Amino acid sequence: SLINLGVGLFDKAPYKHVIVNGLVLAESGKKLSKSEKNYTDPMILVEKYGADSVRYFLLNSPVVKGESVEFHDMGVEEVYKKLIVRLENVASLYEMYKEGEFGELLEISSRAHILDRWIVSRLHQLVRDSTKGYENCALDEAVRGVEGFIDDLSVWYTRRSRDRLKGDTGEEDRVLAEETLTYVLQTLAKVIAPSMPFLAERLYKITGGTSESVHLTAWPKEGAVDEKSISDMNQTRDIVSNGLMKRIEVKIPVRQPLA
Image 1 (cartoon, rainbow, N blue to C red):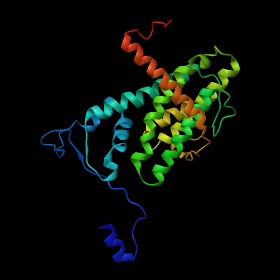
Image 2 (cartoon, helix red, strand yellow; image 1 turned 120 degrees about the vertical axis):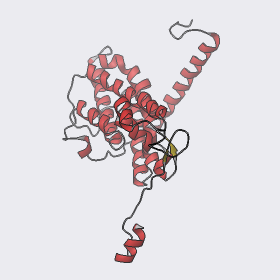
Image 3 (cartoon, one colour; image 1 turned 60 degrees about the vertical axis):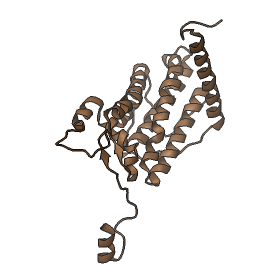
Image 4 (tube, helix red, strand yellow; image 1 turned 30 degrees about the horizontal axis):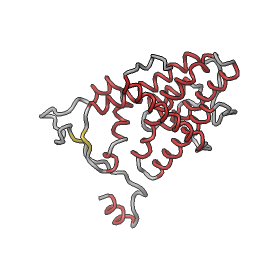
């Protein structure tokens, strides 16, 4: 109808791009109905899991491509546990060990440590893929990589860098780790600002962002990607995963040292 009106009245299309949402259906696949009460009140979900969880669940679904999606509370809960809680834990650890003030970081001075090179490269991959998704108006593609990155940041980078952040490996290494995590969280805040606006604002504030709001900052530029560090880390993680599988097979607990 907009095309018809635009061309009929002004002889041109009224928009350059359009994103058409699909239908949000109940978990059973039926149409949402107030009389049947076949859905949870959205505000109850927001109170329980936060608006960011609901928002990300919908943006990462086929509904943003004009397709139908069956909305279920478990999906929102999964986003909350896998993304929001994990990122909040990283933020809490960052606040616990934070000592310096780095201001607005658009790049970092050194990537001497393999973990730093790897996580920054993964961040730059995320910026590249998200930028491409938004530019193509493919919202699901723009947010899809966030989950994998948060898993990398939480499970692999932060856990492996805890001793560095505490200062157990020396003051110079502690500063490098803190600067890297500051840059990563600050840049991540800008990437997730459209999909998780409230958590993005919190990350931006605790990392010392100088703008009034993360939503008033420029979109981050894609940086260099060290493909070798990413490849090396993937191989390392495969070895660790295989080792854990072998432990399960022979029933040796994770905390029990191997010969």
